[in-house]
Image (cartoon, rainbow, N blue to C red; front, top):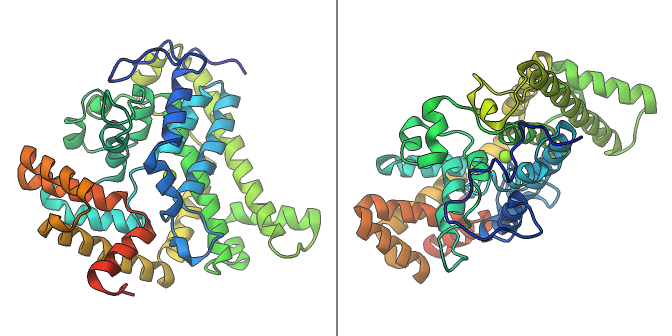
Length: 382
Ligand code: MG
């Protein structure tokens, strides 16, 4: 499908914060994608937890495989909807860069540690990484991504923080919408984590077909269809077939609903997309309800499972211990991080010191955080 007039392109891009020569044989958003793949924060996603701690088993998702799954789903959708596939991919690959070790448990712990210093939010941190923390270019800090990729990374944000973020924060104050590619990434993210957490939850024995078919009509429909078509399938093949169909059903629903909404809204430009009263990329009401129900099941049976809660409890202690120890005595930090802490403290006082310590702790992988904790405290708490 040809690119829609309302897609984000090089021509309607709001550009980069620091002017650079044209990217030559790549588009601006392909260049963004390439810069993201080559940055250090992207590589660390391999050892950051999605739900299960990395060392619980090699088959579970990590933030890296999650980001790749989001990118795959988002690219397919972008192409079939006539949107900018390169931008969709760039946002997908970078949307989780700011996550702390240990998933949401780590984020909540770091946010609590930072409560007196402006808080910690992983979306804002993702933006901070690409705008400031990655040091790879002589001419500027950060990797100087386009406005559209940065806008997509900042999925949500409080008005207080938005006011300090300049151009990319404006829409949270004016009620404008982000690009269609950013809207698409939000829902591709949801398709990816709902389906892979189902898969991982089943693999971990926290969910069963019996429970899912009893509680979700959506799951049951695909489970029964696979049964009718193939009979009883051995091993995990049946599970994969059901989940494959669930992903596909969500993709088809999202594509068809969004195409109809785009047609009805008759948006002719990216500016018109921004001025809409709400997102144009959406699931049908039926799929929205099916998805919300699945999320509820995942929350009760997987995210609140005692084995996951043990991990989150340990994660809270590790992150809190590391933060408070480094905040009290920055001399314990490696030289490069100590310099960052001293510089920020000079500029912003205690608040600056805390932010630089939070940057250091947030950048850790699960295993690095555990090793640092063991080095400082002698044992890994369980
Ligand atoms: Mg995500």
